Amino acid sequence: MSMRADEYEMIRSRLTAPGSVFEVVPAEIGGRTYKSWAQAPTTLRAILERSRSFGDQTFIVFEDERLSHAAHVERVARCASALRARYGIGKGDRVAIAMRNLPEWSIAFWAVVSLGAVAVSINAWMTGPEMQFCIGDSGSRLLIADDDRIERLGDRLSDLALEAVIAVRSQNGSDPRITPWQTLETGDGPAILPPVTILPDDDATILYTSGTTGNPKGALGTHRGSCNNVITTRYFNAVDAVSRGTAVETLSLDGRNNAFLLTIPLFHGAGCQNGLIFSVFGGGKMVMMPRWDAQRALDTIAAEQITDMVATPAHFVQLLDLVDATPGRHAIGSVETVLVGGASPPADLPARIHAAMPKAAVGTGYGQTECTQIATLSCGSDYIEHPKSCGRPVPICDIRIVDDAGAEVAAGQTGELLLSTSTLVKAYVNRPAETAETFVDGWLKTGDLVHLDADGRMHIDDRKKDMVIRGGENIYCIEVEQALYSHPDVEEAAVFGLPHPVLGEEPYAMVFLRANSDASDPALRAHAGERLAKFKIPVEIRPSAAPLPRNANGKILKRELRAAWIAERMANPN
Image (cartoon, rainbow, N blue to C red; front, side, top):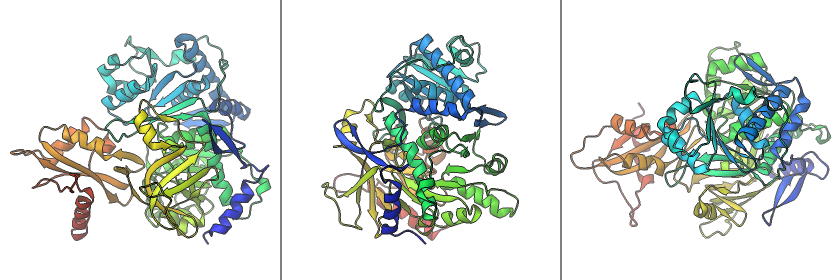
């Protein structure tokens, strides 16, 4: 049975009591008081140095390659020494990382943050112009990238104020502009981390989110934010364990027997914060997939005895469809923790996961890049019986639900969610106005409209932000609309999300074309594809015979367009 509010509160109070593993203490940040985990490490460098104690235990598995925790720290130290000696990279400097999931992504990330520098995660799915903007906007001094990203940037590299481009696993060794990655690891630099003083609230990461004004926004995160988030990932398992009868006194933050299947890109907050940092902190194994493939994932779960998975509903639906199609063929009973995130799941998905992985703690949560991932959690029977809820706030996160005037709404009513926690990012890079609008008096205005049910579970009702979430990726409609408006035949454009059974939502567009235009859906989608990452391109772009409907203030009535499209789907399901 699912947990009542009083039952959850009893578990929470036991877990967070003074002296317990999940004790909560006050933290003074920028003149304000927030909640923090008492056991949280102080910096990301401290997490890395802690991982030396895991020695020869396997850390990274990538195809036929295996890297132990000790070997990983040594490679990170050599890379950090080379970055310091050759380029003078130090505290506060920014280094961009743009590549698919590779062992070098981890090495580069930890080398940068261990120097007190800032790791700038570039979305590897971005187009050349999008990557160029993020690298330039962040003020990155160096770019560490694979060949595909370097090729995508092309001549734009010369327009960026980069001191060096370091190529990972490159086949283009003759390009004089490119420095091979191998030189960072095979040089004469010592295998020890250069000395530096890092404080908990120093800058650590920049992750770019899709922007409401057409360009992505860089969220500037801290060491404290990442270090607290890693304890939150353990809290999820603790709640499930205690609800099943485990004694609080036996709980530990250690995770050296964990085997994590990385299904999410490391440039994504969930991949980095809840996958990479989680595995280094606990001494676990992280198994990288070169690309998502459901059958290969099932084979990997069996071969590597995977215990932990964080993935989107789409990933889990594909896995379970294969399991159901071939009963008894796939050995997935090793999985102990499953977190579903990034999109609203099909209603039956939690129960399907539980049936296929009966000993796993199955759950979900709510978070944003702006709060370093996790703010609420739901697990076990609570999630199975209430799949549309994203759970209750974690102990280090306070919430408010307010109306348009900023007043708190009554219990059960819908309002905008505000979050206050020690994991909030500092600001949006180079966006003082948007920072001031989003972060107000220590509270993050999420833009999500939510309500609490009678037992304190949070439900997302709608979004104030004009955004589509497709398989866990945020797509701001205005960015897509601007790409469509750049087509000479488009006079009006409206982008909105339509439901998808697996991905949650997908983007669609309605356009009103200029007179005598015959621009087709394929032509408009191709035009958008030259300016946007593939996942942002509308599934369909439909021309309207008349100007798009607007309200008295001139705003296009997207809800009206969306409702009409959904009604048409229902009338013509095939």
